[in-house]
Length: 394
Image (cartoon, rainbow, N blue to C red):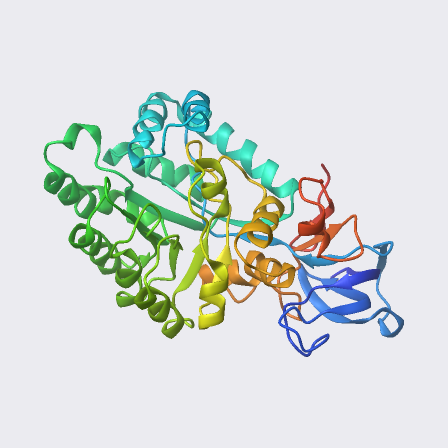
């Protein structure tokens, strides 16, 4: 028999379903309660109207929101790039080639070391309220190393992305066409069984538009769904390619033309603009203009881009605070983008909201409102995390 759990005395509940609470995108409910059964949300409403349940948990007036959905990370890696970060903070600009440092360390690491590193950062993110995450390969750049990265990642998440086209492997520095042939051929054959997504870093210093299109088309032919690292370091074709190929997301979106913004707005139901403020924070780069995208009607997600080179944070609350302070988002918009927006970027309908039938992934804050995530930056506000209906112990 399924045990039911009532979480009651919730100060403010973010449902992300307009009309379930108020008519805002967050669907806010005050003095609310949630009933969980079988790892799913069974009932949502005013605490005074809550049905009986087998177990009762007092939220003590805390805000409750869906677990964060981190739809862009690079967690299968080894090594450390502290010196690079220190140098960059002392005046050296970020360039895509720094990835090669991590490639060398990752190739040299054992499977056990890579998995231990991955689980360390997953636990770190979970403590901060992230209950769903995507992660990529991209630090192996050989058939064997890319495939093992994906096998390791797939033991911990369903949202696994093949990123053999992160940069051109060092061995192919003088033969980028040969590397694209490897990525779209033998490497893809080995990696596709372990991945859901295919990605490419479409950027000067990585892959141009024609190369990116070839990589994504090959992945699509193998049944993988595209996503694109687009327009991070400068203007380029990445966003337009993402929209053209119906990619689930165009990620970074830092440098956009009016045509790029219009394309993302027109494709709002298909291609999400995923913004990664940790990268701009860690590289002192231009902030993405979230306000411009939102006002145009684009769907926007927030993610950490957690990686050892350009955004070494696993904290979605930190990214929410950055988005509000420096990217023109309201606190409500940032929270929606870090939950429902991330779910949209992963094309998931079971997460990112708290309505009957949704997966019971919740974060309870030591605060009465979700606004405190931006109001109190850097403070560890996540008091409890529930995943699939189970309260996690830390």
